[in-house]
Amino acid sequence: VTRRPARYICLVRSTRAISALTVLTTTLLVLVGTAQQNNRFAVSPRHPAIEYGTRPRTDRAARLHAQLRAGEVTLAFDRERGYLRALLDALNIPIESQTLVFSHTSLQADFITPETPRAIYFTDDVAVAWIPGAPAIEIAALDPRQGVMFYAVRQQVIPAPPFERPRTCVECHISDTTLGVPGLAVGSTVIDTKGVPFSAIPVDHRTALKERWGGWYVTGDTGEGPHVGNTVATTAINPTLEIDPANLNLPSVEDRIDSARYLTPYSDAAALMVLEHQTHMTNLLTRTGWEFRVAAHEGRATGGDGAPSALDPALAKTVDALVDYMVFVDEAPLDDAVQGSAGFEAVFEKRGPFDSQGRTLRSLDLTTRLFRYPCSYMIYTAAFDALPAAAQHAVYERLWQVLSGAEPAARLLLDDRQAIVEILRETKPGLPSYFEPPVR
Image (cartoon, rainbow, N blue to C red; front, side):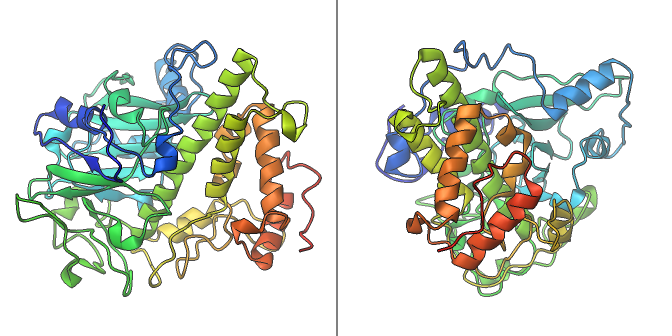
């Protein structure tokens, strides 16, 4: 694959479902930046330390499938949406997390249009995607050790619907954008009136709001903050998305689509911002785990003896990238306050955990930044806990350097660092004892 020194991903136009699935990989030309270009993880998923396709899976979708096959649970089938609601209930995914994307970036791209967008529902470690009239529901579930696993559940009434694993999924979901591991990506896509993509950029919390949400419906209030959501390109030559006030601050999608076909009439702005943060954080956790396991298998220094100097430079770079992202270094400031329309903020924050003062890392700020306390809630996930011991040691050590103030480059304020440490000390099992309130 040829690379160009730009930050855009070029897409081939296609209306074929399989072509639309593979296009993000087969024509992926660049990374988000030069640093990522020089840090490609080229280890095969078949590496003995990884064995992505063959090791037993422990992700929540795999566990649900095992329960179905054993007859321990059943899934109700709905005539309008098939297994969607039953899967969301079984996987404990709130409908308030619904976001709607209408770009052709799916295995079932032929069913996606601006009139029939793909609905994505998510929690920390599982995402479910549903398209009206499509033959299958798509599931992406984070295995704590292996990375994201991909499943398709056919919309057929049978006692225990199988969770199939389409091999074509990893053609898109192992790429430069996912850091070379099985992962996820959220993009801002220039598309035409039929949903066919022209170009896209990867999006996470470092992306300016004005560049986000191309190819997505967005509901809620972003104030004066411009974005390119709810928009399609109208010219075939050098297509672009224009910021139009008529496409900002939509209370719902009821005027854009037949929203009665969906579980809610919203594509919540706050939910989409959390999803953007979470996807790249997921990829960083998987990448870190893979790199440390491969290094240990190859006999390279993983710092397992606690000596910082013993850590392989490549691993140190990976740890730096993970921690920097975890504490929102380089987060793009918000132009104005953001408020979702579906009640996602309350549902998300309610999950905690909370310290004795009622604080949680899930508290959303949405005035000048995404979170009230700039340390990712993904530190509570099974994927973080499943990192090799040497990786956890290195991550905690670097995180403490930032939170203690020993590394001022992270630009976290003392009040924020103090609060984060206090919250972690009460809510994160296994936190090293050296995490004490910062003194500088």
